[in-house]
Amino acid sequence: MTVPFFNPELLASERETLLKSIYEVATDGEQRFILGRRTAEMEKALRDQLGVGDAIACASGTGALTLALRALRIGPGDEVIVPAFGSEPIAGTVLDVGATPVFADVDPVAMVIDVADVERLITERTRAVVPAHVFSMMADMPALTALAARHGIEVLEDAAIGQGAVLNGRPAGLWGVLGLYSFFPLKPFGMPGEGAVVLTNDADLGRRVRMLRNHGQDGVHRFTHHMIGVNSRFDEILAHFQLQRMPELAQRLEQRALVVDYYTERFTPLRDHGVIAPPFGRDGRCCYVYALVVAERDRMRAHLAERGVGSYVHYPVPLPRLAAFAPYADGGDWPGAERASAQHLAIPLWGGMTEAEMTRVADAVCDFVS
Image (cartoon, rainbow, N blue to C red; front, side):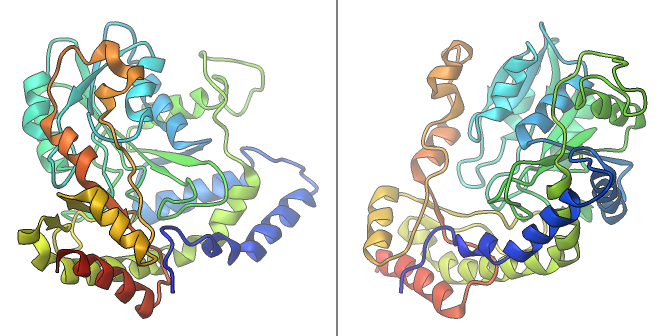
């Protein structure tokens, strides 16, 4: 038996749902393929499910970040604090709107932004902080929102991986003035294509995001542009596809959570052997990627491969150490991000894993330390 890092059969198993969506949209007399009634229905379903004021579908997670930054009117002269460990768009989109990314360190084990370092970096130019949930952990949103309120800055919550996660009774994505989920294929509610949704309880910001995603149009009067926007429109076929799957979301997340629970039970005793697992519990936990912190990461990865278990290193270099962001590194020091980059290792996690697959992965990890 081999256990790949990602099971490609997951999306193949939903082929009929996708084909049905293509047929339904393609044969609809309306012949509308972007921002039609299905997109509106999907947005309403998410609003109702989350109890949020507005949900605005757009073309990608990167697009969602850009729309949120622009809706907040962040631009040249502004600073935005972002984590030093994570995906490139969290800093790249800040540059795209003309602002300056300021890199905060992360907790080396949880791998989410360090609240104390955020406070140290706030200046009179700071407009916002963008915490990102990472792998299986939400950022410390209560502390971050309290900090932001004290300093009069905005929180833009990158919950791209966090759909379905809840912290202190509040869903991920609803902690900041704006939040977002991604529907990229590997995400918890991933689909066969790009897409995302921006979430907000601020009606004015919601209107701005809606216009910005469609070249500054209001969706009623075509070719009347109220502002300079972008093309970040949602696909009707994918909206139909997501609507068909939405009733199953809770079950899909629970399947992944059961794998997380099993792994954590098996791996917690390995801490004294240089293998650190995410903590027990469901509060503030995401079901995206299960990443261990391993002192001898590369040796474990080779060990797993020898036993037919796939693994993955997502971010091998901290963001400010990448050439793209070198001009903004400014001689900084990010020891938590350096450790996270050097030691994180993601292992297989998907809904529907069999007991045999879960056991094989866990046994291979435990064999490494024995």
